[in-house]
Image 1 (cartoon, rainbow, N blue to C red):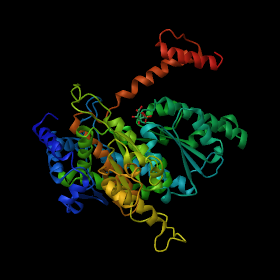
Image 2 (cartoon, helix red, strand yellow):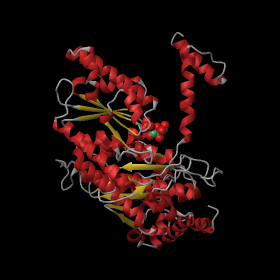
Image 3 (cartoon, rainbow, N blue to C red):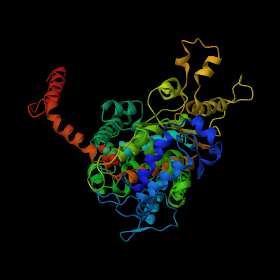
Image 4 (tube, rainbow, N blue to C red):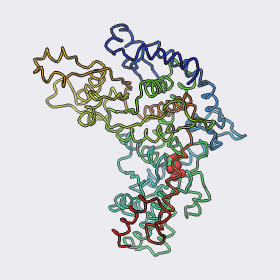
Length: 552
Ligand code: F6P
């Protein structure tokens, strides 16, 4: 921004912004073959973007002018690129192979990572094999992960995505919200004797997680006494068998009453939203097993290597990140849809919301000066085909530009023949929608084509499909643990690329702090122990109404 490369891109935008995708394909039919990238096992089609090969070249120049190469190298080397928290950003070290070596501040972080992974694997095998039992000697049937934000969204997304490789004799549940209904509904039908809690919190100070952990502990101790006849002392001692922790804060874990031997650590160079490949993935590892978990890590690593080594003009995260900048800053796009054609990926958009919006929802640059362009799109989405019957209308005919990522798989995870489908199985019916939607969004249907169908002339304008709606198609052979790791790393690095171009710190999240502090301060006002005078008139009136409703 403000560089000659950016000026050149802006001028180029003036030339291509008015072009329709129909014209771009007519002028350059080979773009379907040429504007594609293969990254590890992912195939990405960028040809349905409102961009030419010249656009991509100019975008790469913008990235070079922003120092992307140096920033990538600095991140992978463990430099403290999260400057506002003075931390390295090394989630890529979580998936380095055992024989790699990366020394940061005199410490071989790869050895540390694999030491924890090995401990996690022993624990996961013990739970899965039944040698780790609850206090009554029964094997564990349900793992309840208690965490929020990065300590919840990654594990739950990946558990749902990889359910088909999980041990179906074990179930994972995820409690995150401090709304007491969450922990209540997640435990009400469980037997404490067969339930294991994983309390996941990087800081081990998060109000929601610690409150839910306390509620769970009380539920366990009470339930073991009432339903299994344990003495109060034995029930209390049973916490050690039914609670493990995942955290960077060993002392706080011990203060909570969890045996440090049952704590799985990670490091301050792992950001919460970049953490589920660390011990934060413990519940996932119990569900899918250490082998599948390591396959997932290998997938992450394959994408890390692609990002680190591929030239920018053939680098999937670089090009996707730059295209996001292109739409956000030059077309004024405000949102970005992610539309997985896989029901197993139904939590993927929610996961990406934290990854992208907590990372890039910033309005000052690294040096504290205001940003020079819009940052951080609003990410949202739902799996296809459900979204088609809900919000795709706006994508097709609305007035806004919404770049969208379509994620699909060649092979079905659950192959099912349709008794009346002829040669087509149900996956064919499903994926025909994936292909049809991006084609309809790109090319639409003209007034002439609509009229040629014999449409009432008064209705023709309503049926015109403008097209020219940009999409990325991401296609992989099958949703495996490795492919899931590749997808997550793809978006992690895409987010990083945007942050570098915008000149912001994508790894802090100061914006979430004020609300937390104010919530803590408001509690006495809600209970009636404190007055309302010090609060703004609107908040005071709302709290007064709440108090009245609760008879306070
Ligand atoms: O409040 C935001 C946040 O700090 C996220 O960045 C983080 O993922 C989440 O809270 C949970 O934090 P912790 O893992 O420390 O409980």
